[in-house]
Structure formats: C-alpha cells, structure tokens
Image (cartoon, rainbow, N blue to C red; front, side, top):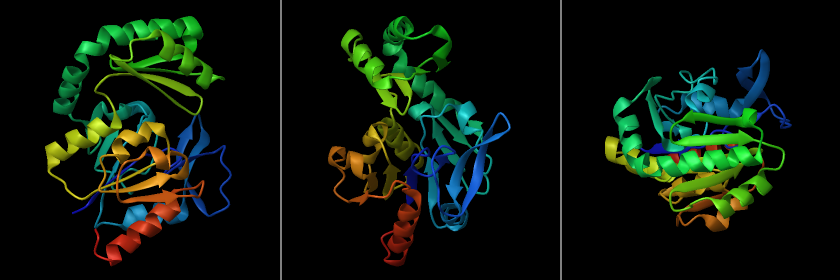
Length: 252
C-alpha cells in the first residue's frame, strides 16, 4: 500500500482567516470559535480513500494537533507532530519513537537552551513557548526580522531555526520532517512515498518522496524528480484530484 505524508496547515486545512469560496467543513475550534476548515471535497476524499495510508506530518504540538476534531473519520491512524519529534499511533504516543528522538537531539539540548534564551532577549517572555525539550517557538509581528537576527547569533551546527507565518521555531538538530519520514519508513517498511507540503519547513520531507506535491513558492527547492507543482492557494483539492488520477493509472 502507498503512504501519503502531508503537511496540515495551509496544505490540507486552512485558518478561519483564509477566504474559502467552496463548500467547507469546520475541523477545529479554539476557545469556542471556529478555527480551521477543510474543503468539503478534501474532507470527503480523505474519509473515503481507504486504499491510501494518510499520515499528517505537522509542526503542531501534540496539544495543537489534538484540537483537530475528526481524525478518526479522516483515518489518521498515525500522526507525526512536533516537526517529527513525536509519533502518535491511534492517538497514543509511541514511547520508542520519543526515546529515539531524545537520543537524536541529545547533543543539541544545551545549544537549544541557549538559543531560546537569546530568543527571549528579542521578544517578550510570554510569547515564547517550549512545548518539548527539543523545540521552542514564539509568535511575533515581525518573524522575518527575528529569524534573521537569531541566525546571526546562534550555533546553526547544533540547532535549526525556521519561520512559518507569524511564528519563529527553534529545533534541535535531527528533528525535522525529512528525518521523521526516514524513521517512519524504517519502522514500518512502507514504500512508494507520496508527500505534500507548502513551505520551507516541508522541503526536507518533500525531498524524501517518490512523488511530491509542491506549492509553487518552494518548487525550486525540492529535489524529488517526480514533483507536481500546485499553483492554487488552496492546495488540497488539486492534490486529492491528482491522487485519484494516480490511483486510476495504477501508480499507487
């Protein structure tokens, strides 16, 4: 069976801030308010494509991922969260995976601690979060400036700095979506890897794919030979249509 690794936010689900002029379904609430949506077409496809193992790979923390309300209907048996640091199976943390994460990140912990302290010099302490030992992040109004300043003052041989939307992330080296794909493949033996993603934080896993669905903004960064550029801002429907076509043609 083929396996489909997909980023979530802005690839399969969309913030309430995004205008969606298609039928849609709420998939997340936050503080009693509608937070995120899927298009109805994407939702129906993911619920019904039982010939495809679908694995979300997200920078969301475990807590943030668990806000998604329909994971069982969407058949997300597996979920990789915390940018690859944690694997959930049937909603439960895989302890073996987490122990391996700790080993991978061990030599970077001191540098991550220092980088987080430097981040606290750039931003108010209350916007900085450390949900796991191997990652920290902050939400700010000028993430590009904070990102560039951090890169100038931290040890990039030990930690990885990324930005996405209004957030700046710091990860221990060895914690990435691409490394998570490698680990999952070794653990499960799946072949025929299909990956979808929309931003620079997804490039490492897109480069592990046999087939990649890539947003136009990062197309030139992706090395996968079988890559399909997605030009639409709402990627998910086009991806699902293409997966259906691949099934009909016997590619997956």
